[in-house]
Image (cartoon, rainbow, N blue to C red; front, side, top):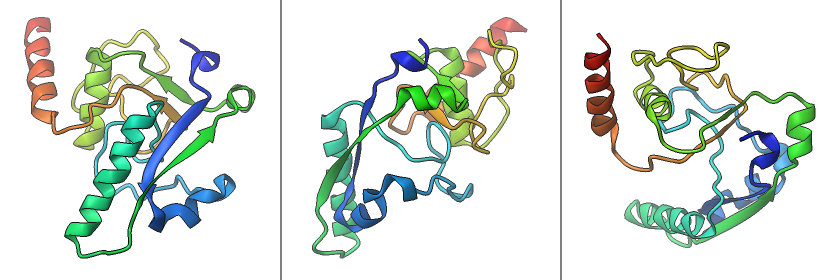
Length: 166
């Protein structure tokens, strides 16, 4: 898969509280605090290709705010068109995982625990053997999302794989 194979339309589920800051795509700040919550692809602005998942994410955020006593918050889904030619022309650093595999599992785990503990044999020698995006070395990461508390499942899988390698 290359840049031109990526989807050009993506969705972001959020709340009306965030609408003003997200309406103007030229002002979206993706320089997030690196101490923020550990997530699958590292700090960043998360979008997806599935409208239903974006709607679910927006509704989940509304429920979270409701438990915190915030009222008058509603879920919204924003749709963005990605200029794939611009991504290619401007040499964005892009990492693509077409499907979950060992490399993807180690990447997700390393981002979530902010670690470089799990190495893997990558086909691309330009990538760090302890692959992660904690320090935002990639401008765009296209991958499936683990989307849950699976650190221990991935950890068990990688530990068992490393035992067989030694």
